[in-house]
Amino acid sequence: MKKFLAFFTVLSFITINAQFEKGTIYLKDGNTQDGLIKIRTLGGIKYKKNEDSEIKLYDYNDLSGYDIKEKGIQKFRYKKVGNNFPQSMKIVRLGKINLYSIKIAKREIVTRIRTHYSFIYFIEKDNVIIRVGNKLSKKDLQLFEDCPSLFNKIKKKEFKKSDVYQIVNFYDMNCR
Image 1: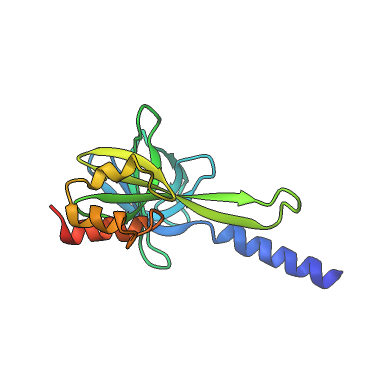
Image 2 (image 1 turned 45 degrees about the horizontal axis):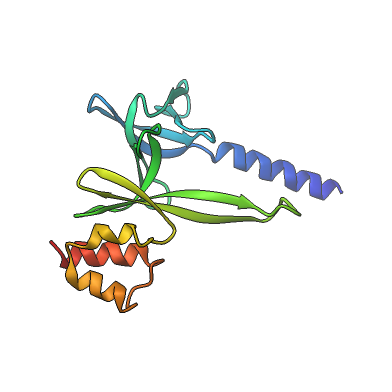
């Protein structure tokens, strides 16, 4: 029992201290700042210049986005979908059509221990962002009507509607 408590204490300490990651914030005034970033559960981020500096809270009112530079660079930008508040979205691919995602956690109801993650995709075309979920609907396919070769590949089922990344990639490489 003592070994378990010691292990749990060490694990908790590591988890608490590992939450801030190196990154860059992009302020709406065009300035950037490098420092340490922690993504807040209910939106926004905590930022500090270094380990010893004071924490500042930022959200979509202050930032256009931020990059996390641990384990490769992950880029996030605040994007507004419809009349909703801007959301922090991970950049999946930028090109003629931009692809963004939001990671959603789903816990098992019975055990509440096992967590499953899925992604909701958003496509930006002509400065309009559309939520497409985890697969394209018939309505979403209209985004690609200006690319007959892609449209035909989707109709012939060479691409599944769940192949969102591959479809956007093909569009960027071969269309318009």
